Length: 437
Image (cartoon, rainbow, N blue to C red; front, side, top):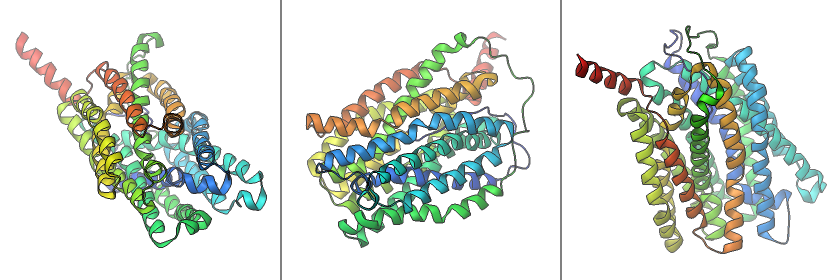
């Protein structure tokens, strides 16, 4: 899933929020996600640098385990930095998160390999991943709050989808860097220092990200009055459980598709540059189809768009992987990554539906915890679990099976959600009024 946290949205767009401010928030978010997700795309190279082993499988698994550790600290960051954003402001919280992420990524660039300093190397990498997870866990809340607080009532779906699109943009950037480096460097050079160049580019753009975020206005104090009472938490248990299942499903979908880079190179033994091209295709699908899904949900409703897209995603997953495993060529890989990515991201209205389904008075806490748990459990474990399943079964379709099961769970969770799109609800109310008049 493309990743997103939800905080209270507003029904009126503050007058000082301009399109360039939304654009700046999107670009800043993309830069920060670039640093976090690049690790996944260079997992094999990082594994050989910091977790050397006679077994390529053991080395990759150790690298993916440390990748998962970054998700462990995300709930802590969501609570600590999310509360900071609520207390002090969205802008200072976003700046602090970006600075922490930049420091962690620079630290990873300059950390010597295991061959140079021994066990201290993986320990440092582990610490830096914890810092990255802490920063990103705190970043998504204030950033999403800023976007939602800038959204007109009838465009929440579109505005919230820009969070997904920004993550897709980071995927494109990571993929372009990976394709370029794998094209101009040999496999040995990529292992030795090529992956460090990818992270160094992320560190070099840190000053630009700070300038971008420093230009944003503050939206914290533009609140709504007369919020509805939340009522007891038990009154919303069903919605929270459905929301958790939906978040878990979309998270598994995102990280299985992000795993195509590693899967195609390590399991299908395809060229590295072709594997990174799949990352670019997946990222482009995110950028293009997330806003389309959000916009369609503003017009036709959240449920028809997200459920329909998820059903198509579930139907296409296994045939897509069968085709990829059979052909093992760049054209098939890029096509599968793009098509499955497009169907996945058309379901972007799911987070808006969850946001609008609960009273505003309890959204910040309940959804932040729900999101953090889903991401920590499934975001950090998906690639590790899929790699293990491939190893123990020898079945190259295991990623598709895992993805399909998650999709089915997500579909049932989405069906349990209420329709919340303002335009659709207003049309229903008008129809009832006409029928009873």
